Length: 305
Image (cartoon, rainbow, N blue to C red; front, side, top):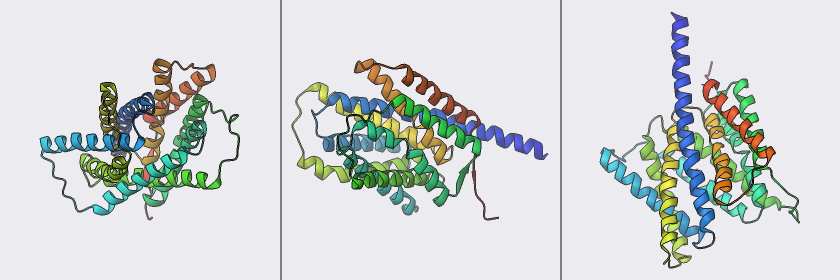
């Protein structure tokens, strides 16, 4: 009987990993489209206005969904919701602050450390572990993305200040806390309710800054871009939140690296960028590793015994 029980548990775990992969695919695809839209808009709209527009459009869509499904936003788990919302907001603030002082190539390279932050934080706070085999494929996926990004630091003319590296480190830690909180909160709070409160925090925080930076918009294409940012962010946030209901935080964080691969693809299609052989090999390694994790990755909870 134990054999059948173990086999059933393995089938359930495999199904959950596959579902996490599909939701992560949606998350990566939509967020990459959002970033491509932001890049395409250039300097037409201040960043604070873009963040605010993303926030309130997200809140509007999620609110309509909650009303349609008659889902109550009442909850008694305010601790997890506040940890997720505030840490996620701090991660964004730290990230955008640091990116103003370091090259894009370094930002992309440092972002590869995010799964490591999530791995450590989830181990400390949620007592989640992954198998050695999964750790190997996680490392291989990060290496593949490193090849795909193909960072070039030759144009860096000065040493990056330590405080900037410290801010990037804080961004990664806050991100790890936020995503681990997502994983923990979805066990007791409905994903759409968790999304709602996080988006409300972002909107309320960005509103006064967007008011100060406000610029009138008359171009219909810019308005379309702003709505596109909001719609893509809504679907991306949905995919992120749902993925963490099915798999451990470290595994989901590695699956989210697919977004960088999609970003490279949009660069080829829309911004006339060229894919090198090294980048092609890197993308193949990335998807091979993530595909293996999705089919064979294992996560477990530590016990007190």
